[in-house]
Image 1 (tube, rainbow, N blue to C red):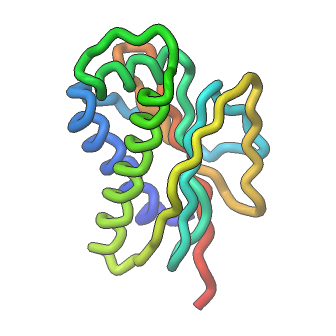
Image 2: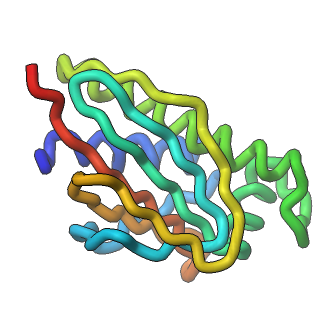
Length: 157
C-alpha cells in the first residue's frame, strides 16, 4: 500500500481529534494488520470509493469511546454510550474522513466517503476482502487507544 495514501489519514485523525476533544493523540507504531482481525467493542466503519477504494474502521474500547464522546460533549461525564454519544463518535469518524478526502484531493487523489456505520458488540471481527490493512493506533489520555484500520486498494484505471 502506498504511504502517500496513509499519511493523510494520520494527519486528519490527529488534527480532528485535537479540534474536537482538545487532546492531541500520540501516534503509536503503524503496522500492517493480518485479516481477519479482532476489533474493540465499538467500531465506526466508513467506506471509500474513487481512485482508491476500501474501508476505514475506527475502533474504540468502551472506555476510550466514553472519554472521546465526553470531551466532544463539553466534558459531560458519561458512564454509558447513549444515542447522542454514539452520534458524536460517528460524526468524529465522518469529520476525520472528510478531512482525509480533502488532503487526498490536494494530491490529486479523488475519493468519496460513505456515511459512517457504528457497530457495537463483544468480540467483533473485521474481514476486509482482498485488501491490505494498515493499522494506525492513536493513544489518548496516556493509555486509551483509538485504532484506525485503513483497508485500501487502488482502482485500475
